[in-house]
Length: 304
Image (cartoon, rainbow, N blue to C red):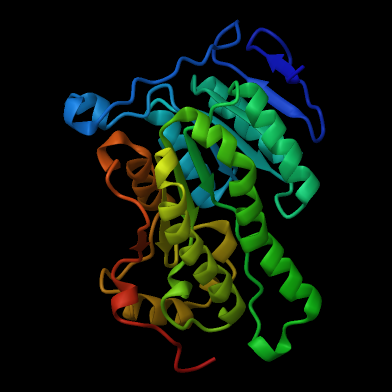
């Protein structure tokens, strides 16, 4: 049994740490494998579509993750996502259901190996063992000078930002291979390219993700699995609300960003969608900054 299949005509069934499956019709939707051939043989609309492709997006209920879920679904993908907060996940699932999007979800803390394994069991069951897209989006930061980070905080950042991503790729590999045309996208950061205040360890974890992106692009190419990453700068999300409440700090950020503004989650999500499309089928091993030009300037606050 995969879990609970819930339709609009029934009440929402909440099963902690279990699969939560909502569909936009009174019957469970069936997954039809997309027709995915060489980009040369595809028409224009197929090259720019994710119709029928299955996707797992971690941390998909807020910020960049939510924007990615909605962007992929808007292009026709069938999505499974996860979040630690059950009520938040359920609220998102109901909202997506109302919009007619094919999105399911599991309660999961990706920093937990057991939760990661359970999540992948759910995904395999929902998608019949075939996964076309894996978006490793979950990440966090603890803003402290490097010398003030505790061993526990070091472990938290490493397990959440890198260990979870590495393990998720290992678990997803058989399903990505089974799709015969897989795409992995990592959420990295400009902190992997330039020095940012109070982000030494976070930058190191993102640097590790960048190297993993490149290695998997080569190691998994034989299975037609591509690997790329997006590296955002300051994006308007709840994760950075506190630091951006300092007006002087924001002025520093904008001063060092050639486009002179913060980014929007949708501006990251659109790139992720492109990297998953047939139109990008010859792009792999790339880390692309979404930063308004900041990484070509560099940034470090003069005060504070």
